[in-house]
Structures are given as structure tokens and as C-alpha cells.
Length: 65
Image (tube, rainbow, N blue to C red; front, side, top):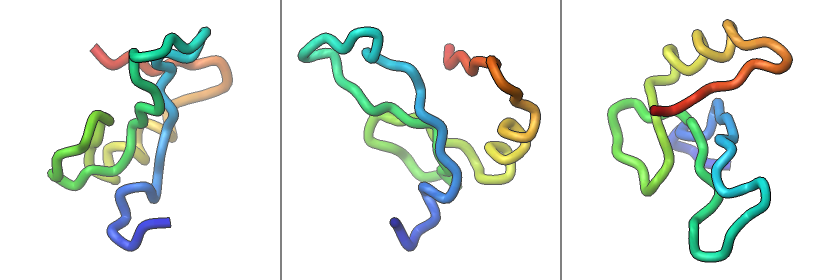
């Protein structure tokens, strides 16, 4: 839990997980950013993240390019 709200909404991005390879990093998330930089994740404003989540359904995928 964080008091700054960065993890109020979070999506796990499939990175180095099928299968994981040592040294290639892990645990990259799409989470709330509110204009702040991250340490390797992808962050967008909470309202935009909530709008994205509302559009997703079972089997959908989010591709970060």
C-alpha cells in the first residue's frame, strides 16, 4: 500500500515472464503516474488508466510500443 496513489490502479505487463530469463528484469507494471517519472514501469494519469481498464474485456491484451 502506498499513500501517494501510484498503485491505486495497476496492471501487470507481461515482461520476461514466459519463461523468465535471469538478467532481463521483471515486474513491469502499468500504473497511475500523475505526471511523475517511474523506475522502469509505465505510468499514465489515473483517469486515463481507469478509462483503459473500462474498455478491456476477458482475453484482451495491452501492448506498450
